[in-house]
Image 1: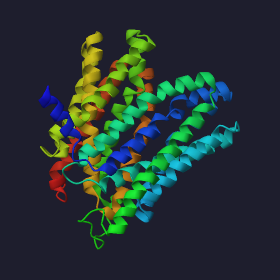
Image 2: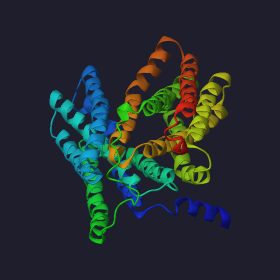
Image 3: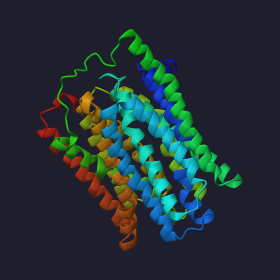
Length: 409
């Protein structure tokens, strides 16, 4: 028992205090991520928008996310991660306040676009900030800590949102806005203080940063763009966890919402409990690509087994496999991207990485629901297994031909 405790503690050791601060800010922000969960209900129930109007507003989430990912990455390289972190998250909170005071369809569309554009501009800035306080020994664990904070925050958000919706639906915008602003203030107080200390002492964020290094363009990095295609394919398959999988539980197994919620909760709980320890055990033992390929293979098995066998045990095992796939693939994908860029182009690299996931979030529900509607769940699971297999195959291609950063793969 003592050795297990020591192992778990070691999983979190050696991570820079500023990474902990950024993770805490992320947790504060994600605790209020209520609008995303209840927006469609609010639009149709409170504002009496039609289904078509509601769909258009929801589409603004994806369009804003794409815009924010690109804009955030560009701004990080131009004005620095700190200004982008603070300005985007506080602006995002202010926009949410404005949403609660309007019922005009066009104004709501504009504000929801601005909300996700500023909110997702925060993401490349956040990862770039973490890269300033990490090194080769803890890149992936730092990302894992940030993911842990996000998952814990997301687990709290539905509970808060459900309670607020009963009292006053508009309160979801106020609380979400306040958490955004609170996270921004938290960053100003603690990260701002750390930056002032660094400037006072004449310290550089990283001793190996060279100002004469050429600025790399991710748009000209062929292998990086190919890697982003891998991320897009994997994410398109994985995001069925949020869209098609609950439908599968309901339509094929006839499970109650409570049982579906318990099954889905296994994922968040698993990530929160073991991801950091798994990363600590695996980090720098093998190349990042190896873990990503294993993560793809595990996801393929999860999809196929749901077609071959039936029973509650299949659902439980498949959730465990999906969770393991997430733990193996996602942190090491982000870690590879951080290693690939140089400091002068980190923002743009991470902006494109965020954009790949934003695109997947848009197309995943469309692909999943169309396959179900036109064919069947069985065809969908096999098709997604094929998409994931293509992602895994591309990983072999990239590994064999990318000679620029072999050491970081």
